[in-house]
Image (tube, rainbow, N blue to C red; front, top):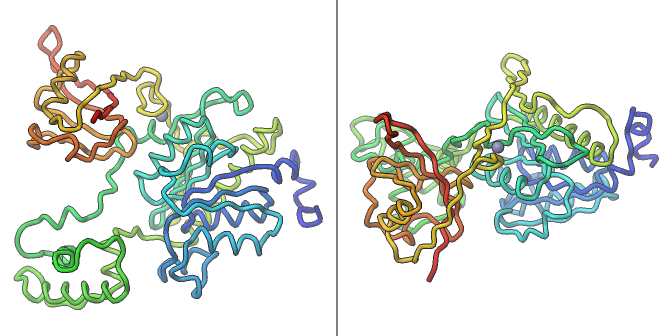
Length: 411
Ligand SMILES: [Zn+2]
């Protein structure tokens, strides 16, 4: 307790509550390192860290749990070692695969979830998981000079009182995370530095196969191809490219600075501490309200944003239509539409179909995929899909409608 002496006279504070808490931190990057450091030092007794990435040189300017010698090692494992030095009392479990692939048993014992993820699709998946588990989720995000925190309190916990909107209530259609890769398909000569790099990667992949990650040597090879392309293209000046620029573009790395990350992580961590106390019937302060806060470091301004619960939210809404479609794996997209029609959902031709879990697009208006087999589309068994379509009501007026359905693949 001597370690926590300065906490003990904080009004309402209970170090035993903190010591017996279990917090899951997903993403041990710029935000996750800070959150994990904060919670370990404060004495949160049990931390579960999930991150599948390895440490790269460009992490070292922001992720204070990692140093030069850690490059190439798994973030979650190195973080565990460093956190044990910062506070040996804390027990730490690590997982180095995608959280979506972990068994539910990993999450069931946690009191709450803190997210420090940099991709929208992963944040949406975590939002859904937290909802399914009925666990509070504190989401932090930072891009460049801006950041935001959202506290998500699930319905039905008597100690936490007011449920809040979820991440999906605020972003009903998730912003695309798609990498700038789509630019690759631009025909003809590259017209910008970015396109030179993307086309260079395309060439590299044709020769050497698809890579999930590139070594420094491979990045250098792609940089050299990009330089050649910039000379060949009539639209660009001959330019030199550096491997780290190549990496930023092809991995679509977002700009990031530790000061903003530290501010956001500190707010996330403190909300976590308040919720942990609440869960034990104690009070060290009201949970952040409004539940969404934006920070602009450029102006030094914090903006609380009122958001409201979307009754039709794909994750936490109550009024959801849910159909279950049993489809053979060799059935086509057209077969799926006719099964939907039998269920009273007539999509006709103008239709946007997205995956609920991450908002990724399965079908967009104007695409011809009627003959495509479901097994060739990015649909997995038990995926929940949302169709947005127009229908005509009895007065001949066009109406925008949405339907959700689960695909159950057979055979
Ligand atoms: Zn919601």
